[in-house]
Image (cartoon, rainbow, N blue to C red; front, side):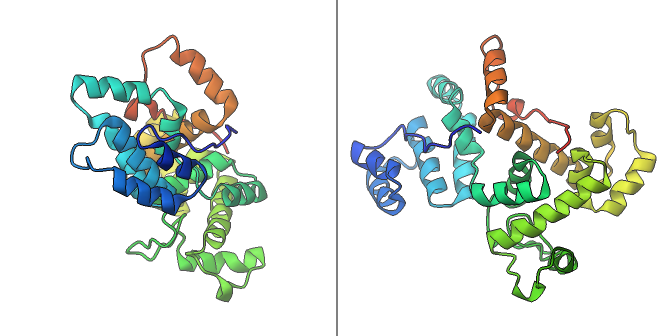
Length: 277
């Protein structure tokens, strides 16, 4: 994997940058709050730095949103600055952060899943919010239903009574087991496994008897649930981005290709990757 070194913020004083690089998030945040006075009309560098600080404070929803909105700038000089920033790996690492790396890697290895696929799914499910709950009571990073966790617990020799689905370790433990089970059900086809994670195995099994199966893109387009169709696209788009950002071999290939082609940014960069785990 690409080494995950904190990117140097492009805005702020040397004092602020030193605190940030030393991992003194609280002091760096206080210093940045003092320095960042241009909040209504921030420069590209200031908005990106603000996004980095939100990510450092574990506000992943705000950080990802702040960084992503940079592509909406309309002034020619700001567009040019954004284009330059978007050619850096630190921009994409901020847009596709990899928190909970150790836990994701641990449980992905345990389940023989690709950690890039797991983090791609987590980014879509919860934007890395540990305590988030849906209206259906799906909980935590991988949005695990308590009823699903209760069903899984005896199969992995865990006492459900001790489970806390807002705890990242417990949540990823259950979520990766379920994602692995969907892969096994569909012969390691990640597209079908992801669709099943969202819509349930019953619906996917039914779709396999009625929808086109030879072309993965045609299958996704024919999914009758708009939410699941968008979910599959988003997770696989995330997966492609995590591969190209954090996998050295993929990064090198993308760099070689990008040197010969116009720069791809934003939604253009989110190429769906239909692949097994």
